[in-house]
Image 1 (cartoon, one colour):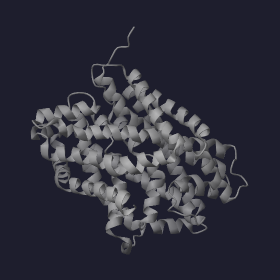
Image 2: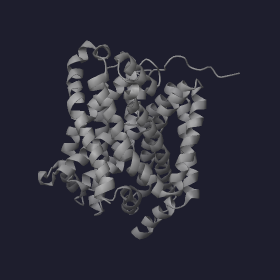
Image 3: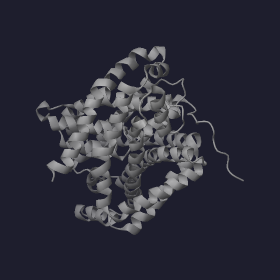
Image 4: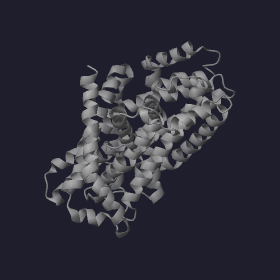
Length: 453
């Protein structure tokens, strides 16, 4: 007997279920090391001030635009919703291409994201079993190189992680996305707060805490430049998770009783809070042990184990760090696979479980390339999605919402109590966000393919 196919778009069970899920999609591994690396390389506190301004004036309006496309559309999946809105607004369906690019971006990203998550998972038992005990920094760093160059070890963790992602997505909105967020996000926040407190207290005697706080919150405005501003804008944009059709899909599950502008503000600011809290968990240890705060992924996989192995209870703290990273990776990976799965399920009229298996199989096949080749992973990440596809998707969406969407549809989606706030954000969507997102895309392409050539 065939499994019944849902004929009605599912919805979040509550406002906080949606908020937790949206935060979970935004909070990822990039919050835990990319933010710290970017802040470290671009002036610390001065970078953070620009980053916060970019979140408020560009990230939030762009997120609201994606929520609007999802909820206002009356055709189910993110892509069909965008097409429906274009038709009802009397404009070309070409404007739905922003969501199409987002769907493709999210699918490409989740394929290599699961590989990085596999690296994270492999480090949890390493700490539990004391694999770093008594080793020199060179030997600890070598373990990371050995791990990522071993396709058998990485492949096993990769398949396990992919299996978890596929299973959770197949369970649908309420039993999959909500369940993941309700359990893992509170656990993530508890671990993050605990590790931040541990880091601040343990590094206080050595002066690491004072140095970290000064670095993060005492801006040196002489460090500011056009390049720093562009990088802060890029970090804000990518950290929130825009341009991947996630927020469009999540918006399609959004009941009318939930405010879109307020939800965008809560999600974006929560993501920013996590990035700052991660900085408080990492930078005191970095300064305490004179580590390289510009080490990027190496900071998490090489230098932090070096510091923690000599700390009382370091193996427990290290395992907690990587458990926290695993939680963040899982919630993000689930959200990345969800848009494609939802679209395939609706487009081909097949059950969500079957669609998740099909999309999951494609994710595994594509991700295998990153398991066996770091060059392939880097091409998808920094050569294709980050500089081109993500900003292109968001740019088309904000232009559509700001300039082409029928005004009556906008009025219908914004409650009377949200008119002022929504109106202000729409001004930013119409004028500021397109310009700044275009700058991100142009700079990213030039930086990747011209300046570094």
